[in-house]
Length: 400
Image (tube, rainbow, N blue to C red; front, side, top):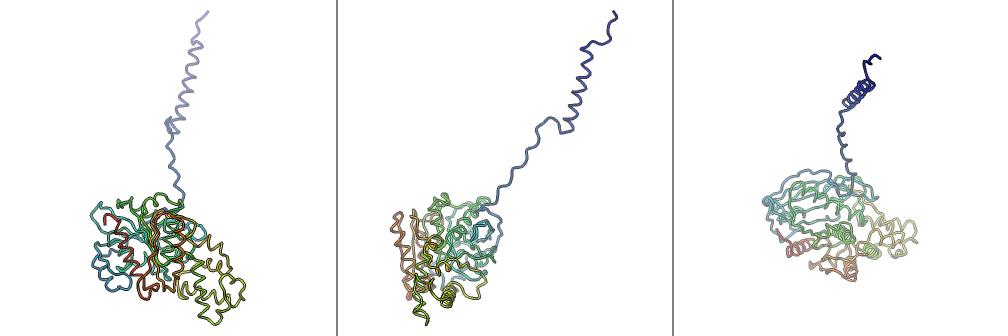
């Protein structure tokens, strides 16, 4: 029998080779047999406390601050600037009055110290203002509290609040506890991110201070921290200094209504707790008068008036739930309250109510310092409040 030219085994070899070559060609066309490049991670979803941006503003020299204080002695007295100050406008994410995410703004001021030298941090909450030009990041002047405090050695973080600065045109959630606290805490978080990115050292000490609406926002923020909002910030908090604030909104408005009764011919018709029964014309006039105590007619900022609507409806539960900041928590850090007995803007009764309520909760010391100025009215007591706050902070602050 003639010998076959190819055996069965040798006939299969070329076919197997062709299949292997074809597979290799396909793999080569697809980039070879190596693993594909991993996809980049999804960017994190926008969240409260995010730092969005930072804009350097003008520096302010120690000499400028000293001169400004001499020219505006009605606001701050008895302090001696030690440092030049650098200023920045930060934009960050927080919640508005409806809980929607917005990009807000605030001021960060830094003492000009040798590189690497740490500083304590002050969260400064500004008082009630009616014009956007007065917001902290819009008003870089030597006599302004965030500038003065930085010149004393503190890193200062000052939220503009929603309705001012980057959020001008939106309603300012006036005397609404949750967004007031959010604006402060989220600004602190964003400022901490900026400091870490730019290697600006703090020493782990945090103080909170503010007068009038700033006192209210200070207490709102401390309450939120004490209730678990941001344990890391609470661990840094040394003390708070709320001054002249409407912490007890119900008591504040009740006292104002009693004063209105003595001032207007229709005053005998109104009685706190029975406002919902008033005739429409008297209700409208009372609401107008109360709102004028809140903001002037030429204000370029829109104030949310939910608290007033609750009050006019005699809805004490809603006011306690949405607006009061002195209830429902126990301070674990000292609270240094300050108020004037002759205050016609924010009644002394509000400070006294906060003092009594917080003292009854126990916890860290709560004190109420009465303004000694004569008369001890709202604006006249500001210099004494500021000086007492600076002196009290200096007893525990390091690295000034």
